Length: 169
Image 1 (spheres, one colour):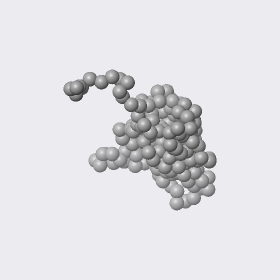
Image 2 (cartoon, rainbow, N blue to C red; image 1 turned 120 degrees about the vertical axis):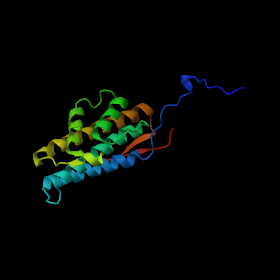
Image 3 (cartoon, rainbow, N blue to C red; image 1 turned 45 degrees about the vertical axis):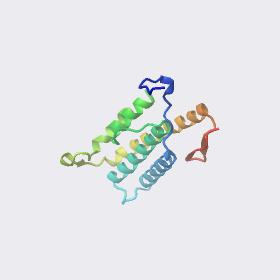
Image 4 (cartoon, rainbow, N blue to C red; image 1 turned 180 degrees about the horizontal axis):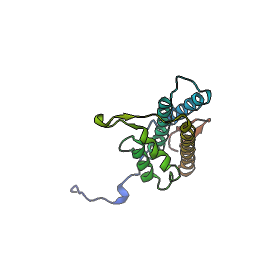
């Protein structure tokens, strides 16, 4: 039989979860807890720039968790790129979070060395950022739970903050 470049769509396999997403989930949760605690205690070491970055890292970890579970990755890691990847993977899922996430890019432009810019948010903006990160975490947690129901027992929830991937049945 001669090799052929033709194939059937049924030959394509669904993207498999990318390993390590559980670590992203745990890290995101830890970053969010750290930022929330530091803000609540008004620790001087945690400037608005530092709080912004910790919150942004939490959000990035939550988005990566969601995408990796679906076997997908963003093109880059700006908030714009993360939002676009989520929109592509889960159309409409983040519509109520979209603008808030996109607005976060205004504080840092670090991709182009010639246009490098960091400006910190006002302390009054931090609660809204924490709320946005919490809402994103809740969305991803719901997606993980739905994934578990849809795909069966190979995804499990361990405790408050940790999901795990077990062997396929």
